[in-house]
Image 1: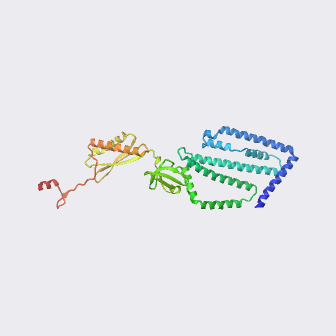
Image 2 (image 1 turned 180 degrees about the horizontal axis):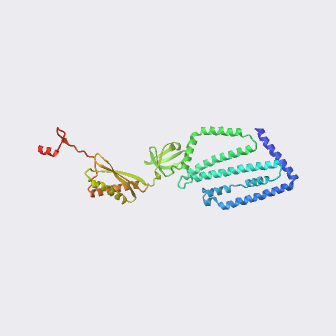
Image 3 (image 1 turned 45 degrees about the vertical axis):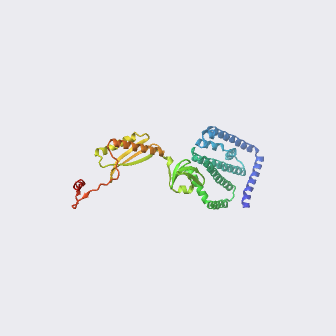
Length: 378
């Protein structure tokens, strides 16, 4: 390993010696190339400053807007990278010693890798923050998650940058990459449970199946989400207790989010007696529709007789409560039921209830009129 590192260092030393010889023997060309590089560098700086003015400050357009992201990337463009680009551009046309060109190419490679790592880190973090940005979300949870994400992204980006730089130096990175892979697998297996809950938390934060303050149903639990942590989610159940659920377990089951309701669909079944005349049975459809239409916040859908029941002719009324609030829906349901009861009383229509009628039969199986039996007994 010592020999692998010494060899690139010796090449750099030889290149520096060639540069010194070239500067002494051909100083006029060297100064010309340096002057051209300085001019090109100043042009690149002016372009950078112009792009900064066009993009403006990131906060001015919103840190997580695309224009804000572009402004952040432009501001993180460093002068060393621009100088390396200028020097490399001049070397493409310069008749300089091979050692000098190799040295400039190496500086350009290092500057490009470092600048690319900075740009990649800023862009990835900005896009993730843009995806997770929610003015109604849990800001503390988001900040904690972003802190962990920022650390992971930085480690990955700079590890790749170091590997690329070492590769350009001529260092054999095969063993290094293999070691990093084995170490990563060992850490992943040791912290499998922690990473499982962490990635589940990130999935909740970014995918947003629910957020803090939503009313959700999970298994046998229905309640309000109080906190989304990096390992658990806390739900305040309807009867008051706090339920703490692992993020991994939470995403393994179906979740019903009641906060996404825009309106509620209500199904109300009722039955009328068989003594109701056919004309009134037909009239009930329009009467009930009028009642729903006159109820504020309710929208009629349909009202049909759907079966001949054992003790009644059964109807099914469907309407919408134009609100997500459960209490308002129940109030509109009650108002419609009371209005139906009053109107049915005016029309002399009776609601049915379970009844049974029994008939006596003679030896021949023919029904016997109970009134005749009563008269005979008296």
